[in-house]
Image: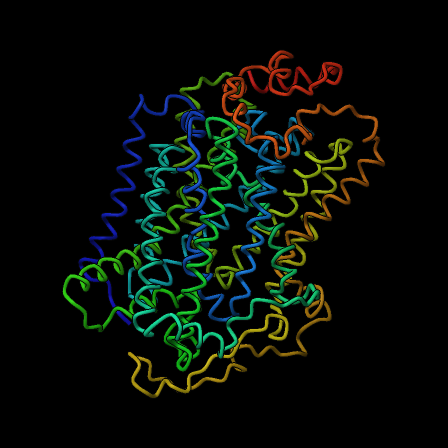
Length: 615
């Protein structure tokens, strides 16, 4: 439909250059990344606001920029129910998981699994995270590059390699500080791009009233559907219940997110970063929804997808940007500002995946160093660990770029990404929930529960990819091409019946396909979590879990829940002492937790184990 001009490439290069400069700056400021803690955890000195913006930038990846507007265009605004989900997710993450992770002073969330259970579960968690993150990052790299290639002719692998190399570069040099502050820069660019599309769409459609009216008559304002059937793709219950489990697996226990908010200078800032981030999530959801409704309003009579102007729904956003900026008559000043904004929007699709890729690379390096290298090579100095961390960032940058090839096999961007998080993140969420909420859960029960949850969620997840649900389960809304024979850009195709797009030979589908495999993808995580917890509890009780004496610092206590926003909390210096990798002593524990009982710590083996890991 259009081509990148010289100025498009200039803007694209300038954005990547600024990101690289941020990495170079933090590679040398303050003496550079002297230790692995400086590189992986930013010296545990971050404030709430930049961390919140970084969390938001990772959320606003290509999955959001491309997938969410296309989702609303195809299935309607019921996706907005995620606003409730995000609130529940942030509450659970901030009040259940964050207090436990933060007070232990860990770098890798999977280190908790060894402290609470054993080193084998730590290894299982680390391996599952690496698999999950590399697959997800492959989607985030490949999908936006493919969309720009199909719509604008922008070189596919040129975009993948160029952006991937720059992300790896600044992440390798500057560590977590570079990741966070580059995300801050990129989130501003991406918000500007989103806003420019919304403003121009309102101008093209002569007011937001027309967009809302078209969406209403087109059935896109379908906010409420209380059907309890778990086989329906999106209902109020699948989004609120299934979505909460899915996103809690991301915000609550996933290393990519947890690593940033536990890098804050105290627990007050860590919690505050999550709650500020919630405001950002709501704002982005509103922007994505408006873009999706604008897509429908503009193309309600001539759908580019069924008219074969784009090959996938995920390409609709770059298609819209090129379409609505082509020919409009406005004053010169406004014209220049709009062209600049749209150039940013075209390039922010690539920046969207850059923020997520850099976070993933840094998290992968962290778990590799902390879980796979540091425990087995204890003689390594901090300087050597810092160099190894940089080497791991470089290595995983190459792996993530290579994994982009796998993404072409996974279908729609948004659903594929959340399905991966559901299949792998659900059992991991169940494993951490067992450790934090169940004092009697033991290593045997946790391992059997994890394996059971992973097998079940993988079974239904792979089955749903092989046998996609039928239209009556997904409820796609009507699209039309009746207006494609009139003047509307380059769209001159004839109508293609939607039945041909979704036709599936019924005789080839087994009985499980329309029942078990048609389970809403948002319930993959719920299923994996519940199976892990239930099986873990049963096996733990059968193997003497009630007889064990669990250190209370590994559990969520009533003193931790909803108690971290008092003013005195921000003035406590002992939090920093714990986070500086000092040993857990009786004095420190008593200071950090007034309800602590010395009698409960009278287990020599557990105590020595904790001290050994943190010295």
